[in-house]
Amino acid sequence: MESRGAFADRIRLQLISRYHGANVEVDQARFALHVTGSGLDLILPLAPLFHACERQPDRVPVLIGEYVTSVEHQLTPRPAVALSTSRLLWCVRNDRFLGSHGRVGDLLRAPVGADLTAFVAEELPGSIMRGVPREEWASQGMSDEDVRRTASANTVERFEPLVGRIARTDRIPADGWRVASDSLFQGSLLMAPRVLAALAERAGGEVLLGVPDRGAVLALPAGLPSADRFQRRVLKEWREAMNPCSRELLITDGGGLRALSRRSRTSAPVVLPWLAE
Image 1 (tube, rainbow, N blue to C red):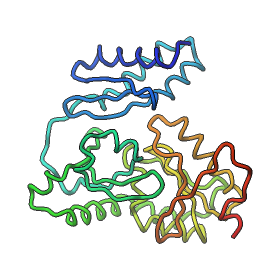
Image 2 (cartoon, rainbow, N blue to C red):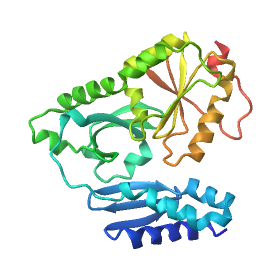
Image 3 (cartoon, helix red, strand yellow):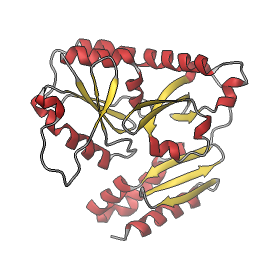
Image 4 (cartoon, rainbow, N blue to C red):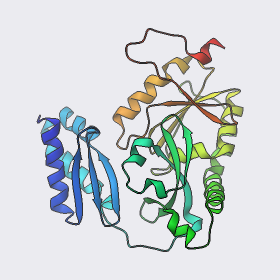
């Protein structure tokens, strides 16, 4: 199997040859490709594909071909459309993702916890999301507070069905819940207060949360015996994610969110705070 650097360059050349309007650069630190161009600015992680090729060396050409085809919708620029307030949502991503975008200062942002930040984005047809710069809503006579209220209301409405589903759950699985029905905005449920309240009420106390992939949220009642393994579960999903988001842990009592510190690889075993209560 070729080195990571050679593998990344191989995929870069594949994308350049197929999508001529895209500028593709290798991000060695994240083992990913940074794609920019007209209407494009995205990060394509390569670790899941690389590991799949390692496991199935006889299928490498097929796996690469499938991968290149699978990102087609992300690499197709969309024509500019007028801002629609009905499509505004809070989008949750890690701070590194935001830092890779040159106009991050133009986005309306809100801290979530740990390395996660929410920003106002517009959902577009074709499973496309774009951060909305301030100039677009200002040109429509809207204030930051107007946009904040609109995005919050839309986000609450989007996840309202989940509130009922949580309340009707007859049992809590030993490994908690895994919510993965929204490939772009799943982490946005952290910006839906009624969902957090429903989780805490059903759990009868605090709930641990993780967003290892942009399309998956893990939740586990902190009082369960399996809580001490939750950190490892989040880390495993983050490492294997096609679109990794965060390996950090959050905790909610239903009224808010706060970050939990991860143990370092060299630290001695400790009793996690919620197990000592």
